[in-house]
Image (cartoon, rainbow, N blue to C red; front, side, top):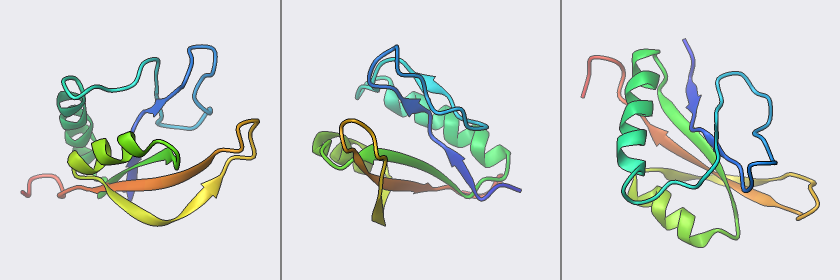
Length: 105
């Protein structure tokens, strides 16, 4: 059973696809206050049904509004960062959303 289920990667531009990783998707546009909750509900439902215990996403350390947005959705910032070694010298925070096991609330 998987321990995590990744939240879809949001590419900054359509010509920058998501990294080719199993079980990940690419969103062409960022989430909004209106479309995020239903999407998160769908993802958490599917991930919980698959036995995942948490969702995980990565976000650039410079995106402070996004951090507040994810935290409002229930995500918790994990310790540490990761550097991407890309042209923008991106460094990212990891956020996790704990899930209840399937059939539990």
